[in-house]
Amino acid sequence: MGLTRSPGLRRLAAPRPFVVSAADGTRDRLAVERALRGRRWRPALSSAETGMLVVCGNPGPALTEAIDVVWRDMPEPRVRASALDLDGEPGGPRPALDLEADMADRADDRDGLKLDVLHVPLGPVLSYWPAGLRVDLTLQGDVVQAAAVAAVDTGGGTFWTEERQAASRLDSLSRLLRVAGWEAAGERAAVLRDEALARASDDALVRRFASFARMVGRSRALAWMTRGFVKDRLDGWLRDIGAALEGRPVRPRQSWDETAAVLPVLLQGAELAQARLIVASLDPDLGAVADG
Image 1 (cartoon, rainbow, N blue to C red):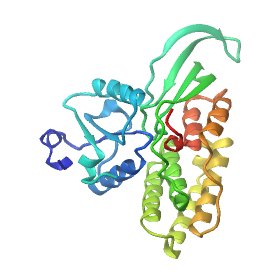
Image 2: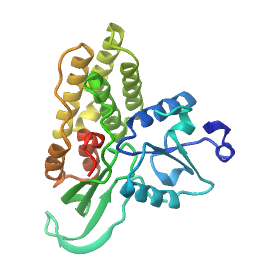
Image 3: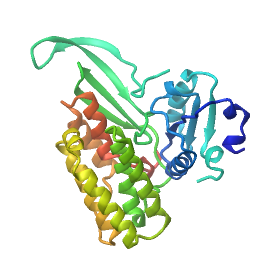
């Protein structure tokens, strides 16, 4: 059944789907994003904003449980759809940060004050979040004191094969820009990603990306928000995309084992908003991780 023909969906005014992807759902997620763009629908940033849930791929048990929690807490009337419903072919109320904080203790902060220590899970159901990832933070105020990462959904094989290197980085770049709050630039990166997937690189695409890269690189606000490690990753992606579009070799994506080792270290001492940018700048591909 096509999405616009569904009686439940027709009752919803100005649809804003909340899109969740399993580790094997990259192909479906990209199809959903193209369909939303074609309908001029904006995705919801939080499940609390909408009564429409779109699930991409085949979630495993742990991710299914998390999705069910979000589904139960979504406002009614609500409808649950798949990429097939939205695109026509295959391919929780909770805040955008799905927080369930427990007050565990009090400890001294950097100024010697007593602040509550909160244990806060991020993911695995968040907007523009790596599919299958959960990060458990220990926060004091809004500063991360410790972090642990887990892959709660894996497998299915990576969609990002070697010939899709440029599109892979453009996808990661799009999500990072959206997390940073630059929605228009994130959308433009997604359009370039889809163009790179649709055909082999050509001079026109190379020129369009070069113009886009200059715009991103010149943004003072973005440079300030992504200073340090995140800025280095962003600049590296821009270089890699340009190289891949021109047929030059680029570095392979970081493995999950590498990401799992470095992410807790990078998160320690970061503020909560910066933590989301750090995760987005690594963007692990858990579809590439073998099940089990």
